[in-house]
Length: 135
Image (cartoon, rainbow, N blue to C red; front, side):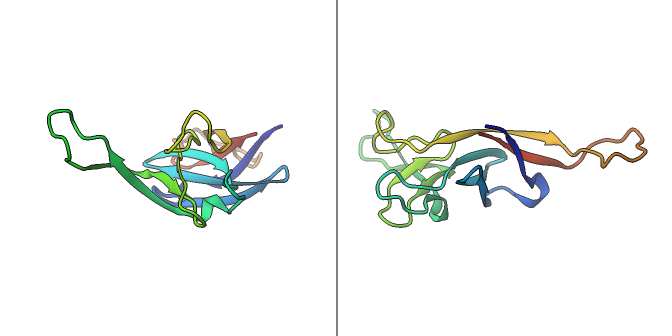
């Protein structure tokens, strides 16, 4: 298990994804509203390429004082499988339908500063970084 630099933060804007292959695994890296998340690119239902699915939001519970009112939220946080529509929370890999029993492997992600190539350097302010997935 290791850490892998996969994509520069500037190349992965909000709402976008990058599918990478690390240590024999296909993994989707997502920018979810400014937070980077990584999950296994395989739906637990029938092995579909999950990370090719639609990123969307979901219907939220109505308030007790407003039964029947439909609320929509969590835009950009829900991934829908392209084969059968199973939905997963991108922030933790848990199924929306059955979060305690059905989940997709998620991976720790950090953003680390861009490294200098080993030449003479001067103090600067970092404006770019790398998204790093830890397996």
